Image (cartoon, rainbow, N blue to C red):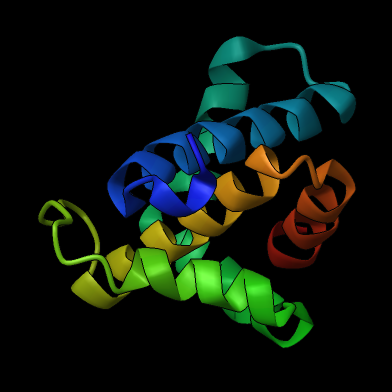
Length: 121
């Protein structure tokens, strides 16, 4: 299936997993070994408000394509209602997830890591 034919919801689902994997990899590479501790820290990375703030740090560094994929996710109208986030943060987080799914599916691994470092480190 062509990435352009994939739904924003499906891409956000994938992007959520991609961000989770990058987060866990970063924590393990920092030498952390306690799974409980890592889970607590990882939650701070993957919550909508943190992803929204990370996007704000990334935005000046994005290409036109990356920004277009972000907007595709942010503007998706079939999103579920946010639980512990503002609607604006949730929409930005969804856009970020779609953008990371795009980078993952187009095998831009170095770029994913670069943007993650800008946004979250």
